[in-house]
Image 1: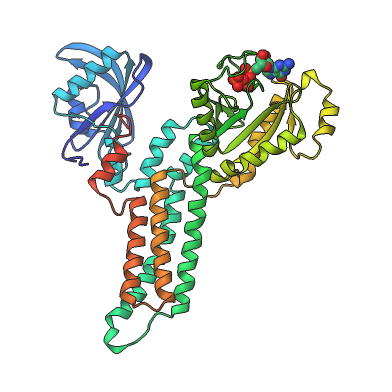
Image 2: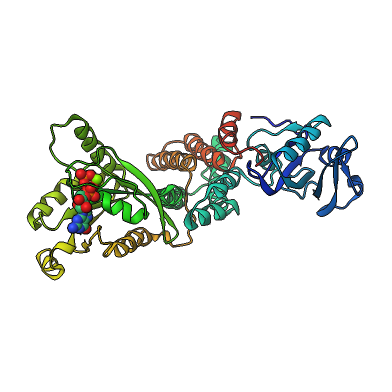
Amino acid sequence: MHSNTEDTICALASGSGPAAISVIRISGPKAIEICNTIFKGKDLNKVDSHTIHFGTIREDDVLVDEVLVSVFKGPNSYTGEDVIELSCHGSPFIRQKIINLLLDRGARSANAGEFTLRAFMNKKMDLSQAEAVADLISSESEASHKLAMQQMRGGFSSEIGKLREELINFASLIELELDFSEEDVEFADRSELKDLILKVHKLAQGLIESFKVGNVLKNGVPVVIAGKPNAGKSTLLNQILKEERAIVSSVEGTTRDTIEDEAVLNGVIFRFIDTAGIRETKDEVEAIGVKKTLEQIETAAIVVYMFDVNTFTPSTLRDVIKELEEPLSRNGAKLLLVGNKIDQKDEEMVRAQYKDFDDMILISAKDNQNVEKLSNKLVDLIETQEVSSSDVMVTNSRHYEALTKADASLMNALNGLETGITGDFIAMDIRQSLHYLGEITGQITSDDLLGNIFSNFCIGK
Ligand SMILES: Nc1nc2c(ncn2[C@@H]2O[C@H](COP(=O)(O)OP(=O)(O)OP(=O)(O)O)[C@@H](O)[C@H]2O)c(=O)[nH]1
Ligand SMILES: [Mg+2]
């Protein structure tokens, strides 16, 4: 993906609907000059950087709008180039008029993400920071906001930087040895090298592991509500979402397809998935739903297994847990047992009956009894997974894949050291590992990669 930096680009940077104020952004070598041709007020060519000016925009002699123009001169701007941010009244008509005037005077419409692409090319930020900008814009919860902010400010980049530094040291030691290979010297102490690789491997593993949590924090923790028909799953979903999202009825097999919606609990996004009740059925549509339920369980982070305390027994519950064991383990999902319809039974009696099951919650979904307790429990289950720590976390699947490949190359190098393979092969593995790390921060890029990343941005960013 190229951005011809000879071009001056412009685009609407704020939302597309009518608004009190809209911001039009212009960046490039002629940003100030072009803006100056339509602006009446101070001569923008003569003002200082980081100043704001009031004036009017005119088309010929017709007044289009009164505006404020912020001037940022490169390299001290978002893109590193001369940048103008023009605040006008937020009417779609005015905005389009001003943009048309700018295009007329020689600016070009910016592509999606082109401002941030320029910031990356001008080394204002590395690639993972640029990606965090997009995450920040789309963050919907406290947790996803925090992660994006940390990444944008370079927390993740500096972790990757550390890994790279260690490996570069390593590679230079090995390569120095290669230069003198005729003389059969060993500069690099093999056991020291091994320790170094193990150290980097440990760091990489920590980051790779963090993806599991980082990913759910960014995209929402998938919570599957499962159970037999009529357990009250849809009633619970509606209570948590505080709306009548799913149909509730006393007919078994009401929910036939999965229903998904998000709720933010304690700053964390949860994606609740209400499912078709699990039972043997001759109904074809329902059977497809049941199959889907089982698949959902395999991808969940938490499975809320719900049962009706009137019709269940501890021994059936034990059987259910046994059946769920295998699908749960596939993704390392946690199980939360929830006994429902406690309004129809004596709570103490039921508690005594199920005393062997730790951490079970008894609720009445219908009467909204203990549902908040259940929500808190969900938050606890996530938070105890060290989420609340301020450690750097991987949230981006591209980074996750690159780290996994980098680590695999490291393991090849380690293997090489252990089996006494010659230095040139080991150096190759290390170079390979460096290559993958470089892809994360953007020292190594391709047009395809950049195109992929920046085309997902919105125009104007
Ligand atoms: N008494 C009582 N009834 C409940 C409670 N929760 C749900 N119900 C009733 O149980 C019936 C089934 O509720 P649903 O929420 O549709 O159950 P479901 O698990 O989604 O059922 P399927 O979609 O068929 O798998 C409805 O008549 C609900 O009103 C509760 O806490 N107490
Ligand atoms: Mg249902």
